Image (cartoon, rainbow, N blue to C red; front, side):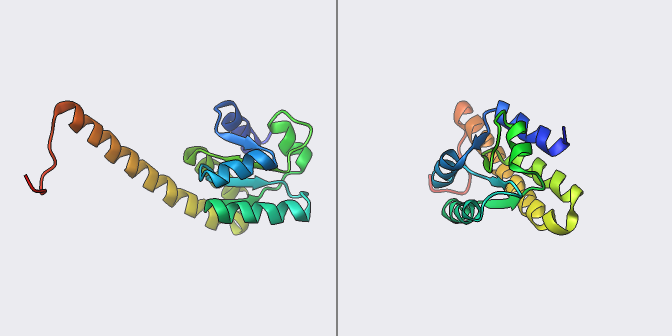
Length: 145
């Protein structure tokens, strides 16, 4: 199996992938979606719905170079037209692998996902520092006392 499809399967097993139109739409509406993957042979209506979901959830979407059957096989189904990656790490990894496969088509998406992943890492680092301060009873400097 292809590296990208393998990464999609890992995301599914990790609970970081929503498969099918309704779960993808729900993840987007909840703003949990980071990247929507659409099979290359998905119906025009599916592409229209994905664009709508991506706009509503403020996330990225890409048409992957796999058929519905190939994408479905990666997620344990007979066919899958769309899937939503809900973890920024998996989304960035998939974006990087797609960009390595076809830089002209996927480089911009991969770069956007990389920037989002860096921002998420910074937020996570700040949150961890804050939690350490709370446990130690530390105070922030620069504020009113």
